[in-house]
Length: 239
Length: 239
Image 1 (cartoon, rainbow over the protein chains, first blue to last red):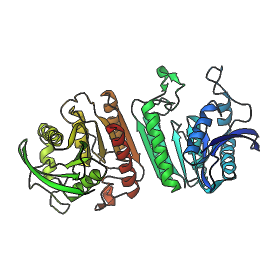
Image 2 (image 1 turned 135 degrees about the vertical axis):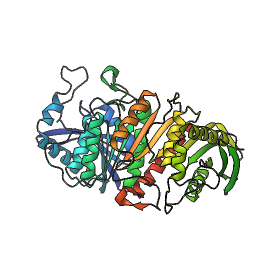
Image 3 (image 1 turned 135 degrees about the horizontal axis):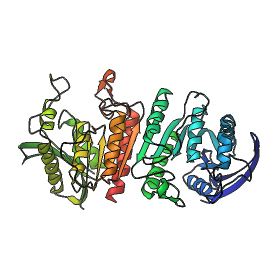
């Protein structure tokens, strides 16, 4: 088994995008495809590593750029949320880019287009939910410490199974948002699960985050358990 | 591998108890022990089957009688909750019986007393939480569609890891009870997780329950997924 990375540059809604594909070169039969939606900072090494982890599980993973080539941020920037906020200000464009990323995944050589999923972190967790809300024919989405607020557009029929991996102390997703999301997904008829982790805030999967006073910090137990839950979830939906 | 059942009759707090032990007869080394706390109806075939399922996973399982020998109910009884309500009316006695069941498990031949857990269904899910609240030196408890109300006594230090397997539409455990339980377990410092299942009510593990209009019904997805989650949980805590 040799896991490889390939950078992809392609045109999409409102720009040029630079994403990374990870796959097992030894694969000879079609594999399920999984999107990775990055956090607020945009496509980066963390996402590429998760793509490789998914590739080692037998999937073809696309760590998707949603901001556009060259549009990246770091925690040290004056406004790390600049690109995210610009995109959130045009939520229809965000939807178009999510659907385009999914279409790009499905068209990748070796991907079984009937078996696709998406995961995402923070803003990317929100993107997972929005992809499901947009009615994409994705088998399942797994949101890690996402944001649960609804988009300004109405939900399509949600056919994707939904797994929400949540830190109970997340200041960006308080209990009332959890209750509202549960009601929304129930009303939409979605097959959903939510795993709440105690003593866990936002960004719990990211070892580089150390802002405990603001509720953003790595939580190794929740990180490990949620990744296990995602594996079970994909094993179920991809058969 | 041959899974065997053995009926055990023994004295305990306020009575004589009849429980069932399931184990793999081929085991030659000490095994983790797992308690099973029954639902409102008391110790019965459902619990014995789960005990055998746990035995097939490599554990020694004690499906524990908490009401006393001969005190059993059926759904068809005039008051199926008679024995449960009698015991709940003396919550200190319930605590004593939970701790006694745990001591009984630890003393079973072949059980590694340093590696024990508990699961339970409905009333038994409540009992799992109460065992943790009582400060038992159990490594972990997994509550299936339990009741989240606190006992009248104060929590001890909760050292057990806690996994709560929950149906979001459970009329016996509405969202406000979930939020209160999360706050309680967080305050107690417990390592806790809660898995909420959409479109799932009370009794979701029990194929014999068909009271959808009252919110009690089997939900095969939640049943299967929660059992998988319990397996992951025990694999983690028993090493």
